[in-house]
Amino acid sequence: MGKVVLHADLNNFYASIACITHPEWREQPLAVCGDPTLRHGIVLAKNMPAKRKGVITGQAIWQARQSCPNLNTVAPDFEQVLRYAGLVRRIFARYTNRVQPFGVDEAWLDVSDPGTDMTDGLRIANHLRHTVREETGLTLSVGVSDNRVFAKLGSDLKKPDGVSLVCAQNRHTVLDPLPVDELLFIGRATTKKLHAVGIFTIGQLAAAEPSALRALFGKTGLMLSGFARGNDAASVIAEDAPVKMKSVGNSITASHDIVALHDARITLYGLCESVASRMRKHGVIGRVVQVFIRNASLDWYQRQQKLEYQTDCSFDLFQTSYALLLENWREGTPLRSLGVSVSQLAPAGTLMQLSFLPEDAARQKRQILEHTIDDIRSRYGHFAIQRAIMLYDRALGRINPEDEHVVHPEPYFK
Image 1 (spheres, helix red, strand yellow):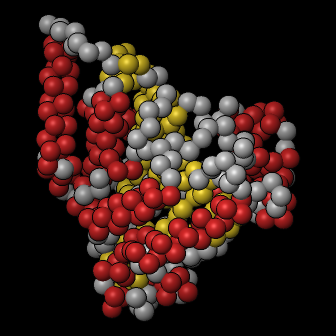
Image 2 (image 1 turned 60 degrees about the vertical axis):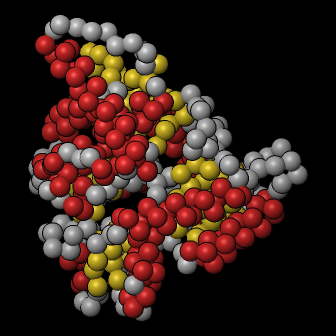
Image 3 (image 1 turned 180 degrees about the vertical axis):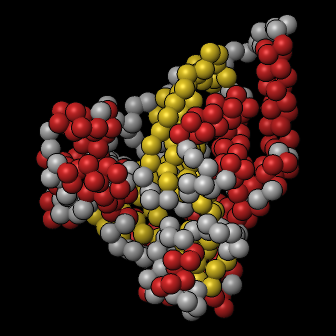
Protein backbone atom coordinates (compact mmCIF):
# COMPACT_ATOMS: atom_id res chain seq x y z
CA MET A 1 0.00 0.00 0.00
CA GLY A 2 1.39 3.43 -0.99
CA LYS A 3 1.54 6.28 1.47
CA VAL A 4 -0.73 9.32 1.21
CA VAL A 5 0.85 12.27 2.98
CA LEU A 6 -0.49 15.81 3.34
CA HIS A 7 1.50 18.89 4.24
CA ALA A 8 -0.74 21.60 5.69
CA ASP A 9 0.62 25.16 5.79
CA LEU A 10 -1.35 28.00 7.37
CA ASN A 11 -1.18 31.02 5.05
CA ASN A 12 0.45 34.18 6.42
CA PHE A 13 -0.24 32.78 9.87
CA TYR A 14 0.79 35.68 12.10
CA ALA A 15 -0.81 38.28 9.82
CA SER A 16 -4.00 36.22 9.43
CA ILE A 17 -4.40 36.03 13.21
CA ALA A 18 -3.87 39.80 13.48
CA CYS A 19 -6.61 40.40 10.91
CA ILE A 20 -9.00 37.97 12.62
CA THR A 21 -8.56 39.63 16.02
CA HIS A 22 -8.64 43.13 14.45
CA PRO A 23 -11.04 43.03 11.47
CA GLU A 24 -10.44 46.72 10.78
CA TRP A 25 -6.92 45.82 9.55
CA ARG A 26 -8.07 43.40 6.84
CA GLU A 27 -8.20 45.89 3.98
CA GLN A 28 -5.08 47.79 5.07
CA PRO A 29 -1.54 46.76 4.11
CA LEU A 30 -0.33 44.99 7.25
CA ALA A 31 2.95 43.35 8.26
CA VAL A 32 3.59 41.47 11.48
CA CYS A 33 7.14 42.21 12.59
CA GLY A 34 9.33 42.20 15.63
CA ASP A 35 9.11 45.33 17.74
CA PRO A 36 8.66 48.02 15.01
CA THR A 37 10.75 50.44 17.10
CA LEU A 38 13.84 48.23 16.76
CA ARG A 39 16.41 49.03 14.08
CA HIS A 40 16.61 45.56 12.64
CA GLY A 41 13.00 44.38 12.77
CA ILE A 42 11.97 42.04 9.95
CA VAL A 43 8.67 41.09 8.34
CA LEU A 44 7.44 37.79 9.79
CA ALA A 45 4.19 37.74 7.80
CA LYS A 46 2.07 40.06 5.68
CA ASN A 47 -1.55 40.18 4.56
CA MET A 48 -2.67 40.17 0.93
CA PRO A 49 -2.95 44.00 0.53
CA ALA A 50 0.68 44.27 1.68
CA LYS A 51 1.75 41.42 -0.60
CA ARG A 52 0.16 43.16 -3.59
CA LYS A 53 2.26 46.22 -2.74
CA GLY A 54 5.46 44.17 -2.90
CA VAL A 55 6.09 43.45 0.78
CA ILE A 56 8.10 40.24 1.20
CA THR A 57 8.44 37.99 4.25
CA GLY A 58 11.94 38.24 5.72
CA GLN A 59 12.79 41.74 4.51
CA ALA A 60 13.66 44.57 6.88
CA ILE A 61 10.87 46.93 7.90
CA TRP A 62 12.57 49.88 6.21
CA GLN A 63 12.71 47.90 2.95
CA ALA A 64 9.03 46.98 3.25
CA ARG A 65 8.13 50.66 3.72
CA GLN A 66 9.95 51.54 0.50
CA SER A 67 7.54 49.27 -1.38
CA CYS A 68 4.52 50.25 0.74
CA PRO A 69 4.83 53.66 2.49
CA ASN A 70 1.47 53.29 4.26
CA LEU A 71 2.34 49.86 5.68
CA ASN A 72 0.86 49.19 9.12
CA THR A 73 3.31 47.22 11.30
CA VAL A 74 2.30 45.31 14.43
CA ALA A 75 4.05 42.92 16.81
CA PRO A 76 2.99 39.24 16.89
CA ASP A 77 0.42 38.29 19.51
CA PHE A 78 2.01 35.09 20.78
CA GLU A 79 -0.89 34.16 23.05
CA GLN A 80 -3.28 34.20 20.09
CA VAL A 81 -0.70 32.43 17.90
CA LEU A 82 -0.50 29.52 20.34
CA ARG A 83 -4.28 29.49 20.83
CA TYR A 84 -5.03 29.24 17.10
CA ALA A 85 -2.21 26.75 16.56
CA GLY A 86 -3.83 24.54 19.19
CA LEU A 87 -7.26 24.86 17.54
CA VAL A 88 -5.85 23.81 14.17
CA ARG A 89 -3.90 20.91 15.66
CA ARG A 90 -7.10 19.59 17.20
CA ILE A 91 -8.78 19.76 13.78
CA PHE A 92 -5.87 17.81 12.28
CA ALA A 93 -6.35 15.14 14.93
CA ARG A 94 -9.87 14.45 13.63
CA TYR A 95 -8.42 13.23 10.34
CA THR A 96 -5.52 11.12 11.62
CA ASN A 97 -3.48 10.47 14.73
CA ARG A 98 -0.31 10.57 12.62
CA VAL A 99 0.37 14.31 12.73
CA GLN A 100 3.93 15.61 12.71
CA PRO A 101 4.27 19.38 13.41
CA PHE A 102 6.88 21.36 11.50
CA GLY A 103 6.87 24.63 13.38
CA VAL A 104 3.82 26.32 14.81
CA ASP A 105 2.00 26.82 11.48
CA GLU A 106 2.83 23.67 9.48
CA ALA A 107 2.36 19.93 9.88
CA TRP A 108 2.44 16.67 7.96
CA LEU A 109 -0.57 14.34 8.15
CA ASP A 110 -0.37 10.70 7.12
CA VAL A 111 -3.86 9.75 5.94
CA SER A 112 -2.81 6.39 4.48
CA ASP A 113 -5.29 3.55 4.86
CA PRO A 114 -6.01 0.35 2.96
CA GLY A 115 -7.60 1.38 -0.30
CA THR A 116 -6.66 5.07 0.05
CA ASP A 117 -5.09 6.59 -3.05
CA MET A 118 -4.05 10.06 -4.23
CA THR A 119 -7.60 10.89 -5.32
CA ASP A 120 -8.74 10.26 -1.75
CA GLY A 121 -5.83 12.38 -0.57
CA LEU A 122 -7.03 15.31 -2.67
CA ARG A 123 -10.57 14.90 -1.32
CA ILE A 124 -9.33 14.80 2.28
CA ALA A 125 -7.06 17.82 1.69
CA ASN A 126 -9.94 19.91 0.35
CA HIS A 127 -12.22 18.85 3.20
CA LEU A 128 -9.50 19.75 5.72
CA ARG A 129 -8.95 23.13 4.07
CA HIS A 130 -12.66 24.00 4.23
CA THR A 131 -12.96 22.80 7.83
CA VAL A 132 -10.07 24.97 9.04
CA ARG A 133 -11.43 28.01 7.22
CA GLU A 134 -14.99 27.56 8.53
CA GLU A 135 -14.01 26.91 12.15
CA THR A 136 -11.10 29.32 12.60
CA GLY A 137 -11.20 31.86 9.77
CA LEU A 138 -7.66 30.84 8.74
CA THR A 139 -6.76 29.63 5.26
CA LEU A 140 -4.67 26.57 4.59
CA SER A 141 -2.60 25.44 1.63
CA VAL A 142 -2.16 21.68 1.35
CA GLY A 143 0.29 19.56 -0.61
CA VAL A 144 -0.58 15.92 -1.35
CA SER A 145 2.06 13.30 -2.16
CA ASP A 146 3.41 9.89 -1.17
CA ASN A 147 6.27 11.46 0.84
CA ARG A 148 6.87 14.41 3.13
CA VAL A 149 9.34 16.28 0.92
CA PHE A 150 7.06 16.50 -2.12
CA ALA A 151 4.00 17.16 0.05
CA LYS A 152 5.72 20.18 1.59
CA LEU A 153 6.76 21.46 -1.80
CA GLY A 154 3.20 20.97 -3.04
CA SER A 155 1.78 23.17 -0.28
CA ASP A 156 3.80 26.09 -1.70
CA LEU A 157 2.45 25.76 -5.24
CA LYS A 158 -1.03 27.21 -4.72
CA LYS A 159 -1.23 29.96 -2.13
CA PRO A 160 -3.36 31.02 -0.48
CA ASP A 161 -6.07 28.44 0.19
CA GLY A 162 -5.18 25.83 -2.44
CA VAL A 163 -4.41 22.13 -2.87
CA SER A 164 -1.68 20.67 -5.08
CA LEU A 165 -0.77 17.09 -5.95
CA VAL A 166 2.85 16.09 -6.53
CA CYS A 167 3.41 12.42 -7.34
CA ALA A 168 5.37 10.11 -9.61
CA GLN A 169 2.78 10.53 -12.41
CA ASN A 170 3.05 14.32 -12.63
CA ARG A 171 6.46 15.15 -11.18
CA HIS A 172 8.02 15.67 -14.63
CA THR A 173 5.54 18.45 -15.43
CA VAL A 174 4.90 19.88 -11.95
CA LEU A 175 8.10 19.36 -9.98
CA ASP A 176 11.09 18.97 -12.29
CA PRO A 177 10.89 22.43 -13.96
CA LEU A 178 10.86 24.28 -10.59
CA PRO A 179 13.96 26.25 -9.54
CA VAL A 180 16.24 24.20 -7.32
CA ASP A 181 15.93 26.68 -4.44
CA GLU A 182 12.25 25.76 -4.08
CA LEU A 183 13.37 22.51 -2.45
CA LEU A 184 13.46 22.06 1.30
CA PHE A 185 16.59 23.44 3.04
CA ILE A 186 18.27 24.82 -0.09
CA GLY A 187 19.38 28.40 0.64
CA ARG A 188 21.32 30.98 -1.32
CA ALA A 189 24.79 29.56 -0.74
CA THR A 190 23.75 26.04 -1.79
CA THR A 191 21.89 27.44 -4.79
CA LYS A 192 25.01 29.27 -5.96
CA LYS A 193 27.08 26.09 -5.70
CA LEU A 194 24.49 24.11 -7.65
CA HIS A 195 24.25 26.80 -10.33
CA ALA A 196 28.04 26.73 -10.65
CA VAL A 197 27.88 23.07 -11.72
CA GLY A 198 24.93 23.57 -14.06
CA ILE A 199 22.09 22.46 -11.78
CA PHE A 200 19.24 24.98 -11.96
CA THR A 201 16.07 22.89 -11.54
CA ILE A 202 14.82 20.19 -9.20
CA GLY A 203 14.71 17.78 -12.13
CA GLN A 204 18.39 18.39 -12.85
CA LEU A 205 19.23 17.84 -9.17
CA ALA A 206 17.30 14.55 -9.16
CA ALA A 207 19.16 13.41 -12.28
CA ALA A 208 22.60 14.24 -10.87
CA GLU A 209 24.76 11.39 -9.64
CA PRO A 210 24.57 11.16 -5.82
CA SER A 211 28.33 10.49 -5.70
CA ALA A 212 28.99 13.78 -7.51
CA LEU A 213 26.75 15.66 -5.08
CA ARG A 214 28.52 14.06 -2.15
CA ALA A 215 31.88 15.15 -3.55
CA LEU A 216 30.54 18.70 -3.76
CA PHE A 217 28.59 18.95 -0.47
CA GLY A 218 29.66 15.99 1.65
CA LYS A 219 26.84 14.07 3.39
CA THR A 220 24.52 17.01 2.72
CA GLY A 221 24.79 16.21 -0.98
CA LEU A 222 23.21 12.80 -0.42
CA MET A 223 20.41 14.44 1.56
CA LEU A 224 19.77 16.91 -1.29
CA SER A 225 19.72 14.04 -3.78
CA GLY A 226 17.20 12.24 -1.60
CA PHE A 227 15.01 15.33 -1.32
CA ALA A 228 14.99 15.84 -5.09
CA ARG A 229 14.04 12.19 -5.70
CA GLY A 230 11.46 12.04 -2.90
CA ASN A 231 13.30 9.19 -1.18
CA ASP A 232 11.77 9.73 2.23
CA ALA A 233 12.60 6.59 4.22
CA ALA A 234 10.78 7.58 7.40
CA SER A 235 7.07 7.76 8.07
CA VAL A 236 5.12 10.68 9.45
CA ILE A 237 5.70 10.58 13.18
CA ALA A 238 2.83 11.34 15.54
CA GLU A 239 3.75 14.07 18.01
CA ASP A 240 3.25 11.78 21.00
CA ALA A 241 4.60 8.60 19.42
CA PRO A 242 7.64 6.93 20.98
CA VAL A 243 10.50 7.00 18.51
CA LYS A 244 14.12 6.05 18.48
CA MET A 245 15.66 9.48 18.50
CA LYS A 246 18.85 10.47 16.75
CA SER A 247 18.79 13.98 18.18
CA VAL A 248 16.58 16.48 19.95
CA GLY A 249 16.66 20.00 18.58
CA ASN A 250 14.86 23.26 18.15
CA SER A 251 15.31 26.30 15.95
CA ILE A 252 13.42 29.53 15.77
CA THR A 253 13.17 32.58 13.53
CA ALA A 254 13.54 35.60 15.80
CA SER A 255 10.93 38.34 15.90
CA HIS A 256 13.65 40.77 14.80
CA ASP A 257 17.18 40.33 13.49
CA ILE A 258 19.68 39.28 16.16
CA VAL A 259 22.54 41.78 16.09
CA ALA A 260 23.66 42.10 19.72
CA LEU A 261 25.13 39.54 22.11
CA HIS A 262 22.26 40.25 24.50
CA ASP A 263 19.72 39.21 21.84
CA ALA A 264 21.72 36.06 21.10
CA ARG A 265 21.88 35.09 24.78
CA ILE A 266 18.11 35.50 25.21
CA THR A 267 17.39 33.38 22.13
CA LEU A 268 19.88 30.66 23.01
CA TYR A 269 18.65 30.43 26.60
CA GLY A 270 15.09 29.89 25.35
CA LEU A 271 16.20 27.23 22.86
CA CYS A 272 18.48 25.41 25.31
CA GLU A 273 15.82 25.34 28.01
CA SER A 274 13.27 23.85 25.62
CA VAL A 275 15.68 21.24 24.23
CA ALA A 276 16.83 20.19 27.72
CA SER A 277 13.24 20.00 28.92
CA ARG A 278 12.24 17.69 26.06
CA MET A 279 15.31 15.52 26.67
CA ARG A 280 14.26 15.04 30.28
CA LYS A 281 10.72 14.17 29.20
CA HIS A 282 12.08 11.49 26.87
CA GLY A 283 14.58 10.27 29.47
CA VAL A 284 17.71 10.83 27.39
CA ILE A 285 21.04 12.56 27.83
CA GLY A 286 23.40 13.68 25.06
CA ARG A 287 27.01 14.47 24.37
CA VAL A 288 27.25 16.47 21.11
CA VAL A 289 25.85 20.01 20.93
CA GLN A 290 25.15 21.59 17.53
CA VAL A 291 24.34 25.21 16.73
CA PHE A 292 22.52 26.16 13.53
CA ILE A 293 22.97 29.74 12.32
CA ARG A 294 21.03 31.48 9.53
CA ASN A 295 22.00 35.02 8.57
CA ALA A 296 19.88 37.79 7.09
CA SER A 297 20.73 36.57 3.56
CA LEU A 298 19.13 33.21 4.47
CA ASP A 299 22.45 31.35 4.18
CA TRP A 300 22.88 28.83 6.97
CA TYR A 301 25.67 26.80 8.54
CA GLN A 302 26.19 24.64 11.60
CA ARG A 303 28.92 24.00 14.15
CA GLN A 304 29.21 21.31 16.81
CA GLN A 305 31.21 20.36 19.88
CA LYS A 306 31.51 17.13 21.83
CA LEU A 307 31.24 17.46 25.60
CA GLU A 308 33.36 15.62 28.12
CA TYR A 309 30.20 14.39 29.83
CA GLN A 310 26.60 13.52 28.98
CA THR A 311 23.94 16.00 30.03
CA ASP A 312 20.31 17.07 29.83
CA CYS A 313 20.95 20.40 31.59
CA SER A 314 20.10 23.66 29.78
CA PHE A 315 23.01 25.50 31.42
CA ASP A 316 25.50 23.04 29.90
CA LEU A 317 23.83 23.34 26.50
CA PHE A 318 23.84 27.13 26.70
CA GLN A 319 27.50 27.40 27.66
CA THR A 320 28.54 25.22 24.74
CA SER A 321 26.20 26.71 22.12
CA TYR A 322 27.05 30.28 23.15
CA ALA A 323 30.78 29.55 22.88
CA LEU A 324 30.24 28.05 19.40
CA LEU A 325 28.26 31.11 18.34
CA LEU A 326 30.95 33.51 19.56
CA GLU A 327 33.58 31.58 17.58
CA ASN A 328 31.57 31.76 14.35
CA TRP A 329 29.67 35.05 14.46
CA ARG A 330 30.64 38.69 14.81
CA GLU A 331 28.36 40.90 16.88
CA GLY A 332 26.56 43.40 14.67
CA THR A 333 26.13 40.95 11.78
CA PRO A 334 22.36 40.35 11.51
CA LEU A 335 21.12 36.82 12.19
CA ARG A 336 17.61 35.78 11.25
CA SER A 337 17.38 32.48 13.11
CA LEU A 338 19.23 30.21 15.50
CA GLY A 339 18.91 26.55 16.37
CA VAL A 340 20.32 24.14 18.95
CA SER A 341 20.32 20.36 18.89
CA VAL A 342 21.85 17.55 20.94
CA SER A 343 22.92 14.19 19.51
CA GLN A 344 24.75 11.01 20.56
CA LEU A 345 21.86 10.31 22.89
CA ALA A 346 21.79 7.65 25.60
CA PRO A 347 19.19 6.64 28.19
CA ALA A 348 19.34 8.78 31.31
CA GLY A 349 20.17 6.92 34.52
CA THR A 350 17.51 6.62 37.20
CA LEU A 351 20.06 7.35 39.92
CA MET A 352 22.29 10.42 40.20
CA GLN A 353 25.98 9.72 40.82
CA LEU A 354 27.01 12.07 43.64
CA SER A 355 30.40 13.76 43.56
CA PHE A 356 32.40 15.98 45.89
CA LEU A 357 34.28 17.71 43.05
CA PRO A 358 33.18 21.40 42.95
CA GLU A 359 32.26 21.43 39.24
CA ASP A 360 30.31 18.18 39.50
CA ALA A 361 28.51 19.31 42.64
CA ALA A 362 27.49 22.56 40.91
CA ARG A 363 26.19 20.58 37.92
CA GLN A 364 24.15 18.34 40.21
CA LYS A 365 22.57 21.38 41.90
CA ARG A 366 21.63 22.84 38.52
CA GLN A 367 20.12 19.51 37.48
CA ILE A 368 17.94 19.42 40.61
CA LEU A 369 16.94 23.04 39.98
CA GLU A 370 15.88 22.29 36.38
CA HIS A 371 13.73 19.34 37.46
CA THR A 372 12.04 21.70 39.93
CA ILE A 373 11.43 24.24 37.12
CA ASP A 374 9.95 21.45 34.96
CA ASP A 375 7.49 20.69 37.76
CA ILE A 376 6.46 24.34 38.14
CA ARG A 377 5.92 24.78 34.42
CA SER A 378 3.94 21.56 34.12
CA ARG A 379 1.54 22.88 36.77
CA TYR A 380 1.31 26.57 35.95
CA GLY A 381 2.51 26.99 32.35
CA HIS A 382 5.77 27.76 30.58
CA PHE A 383 5.86 31.44 31.54
CA ALA A 384 5.21 30.86 35.24
CA ILE A 385 8.96 31.01 35.82
CA GLN A 386 11.62 32.56 33.58
CA ARG A 387 15.19 33.75 33.67
CA ALA A 388 15.44 37.48 34.33
CA ILE A 389 17.30 38.01 31.04
CA MET A 390 14.17 36.96 29.14
CA LEU A 391 12.38 40.09 30.38
CA TYR A 392 14.79 42.50 28.69
CA ASP A 393 13.24 41.91 25.26
CA ARG A 394 9.58 40.95 25.33
CA ALA A 395 9.53 40.01 21.63
CA LEU A 396 12.29 37.43 22.08
CA GLY A 397 11.50 36.44 25.67
CA ARG A 398 7.80 35.72 25.09
CA ILE A 399 8.50 33.04 22.49
CA ASN A 400 7.65 29.60 23.84
CA PRO A 401 10.00 27.27 21.95
CA GLU A 402 8.53 24.24 23.77
CA ASP A 403 5.67 24.24 21.26
CA GLU A 404 8.01 24.08 18.26
CA HIS A 405 10.30 21.21 19.16
CA VAL A 406 11.83 19.06 16.48
CA VAL A 407 12.57 15.46 17.48
CA HIS A 408 14.69 13.96 14.71
CA PRO A 409 13.88 10.27 14.20
CA GLU A 410 16.48 7.71 13.23
CA PRO A 411 16.75 7.46 10.29
CA TYR A 412 15.32 10.40 8.33
CA PHE A 413 16.81 9.16 5.08
CA LYS A 414 18.33 5.69 4.86
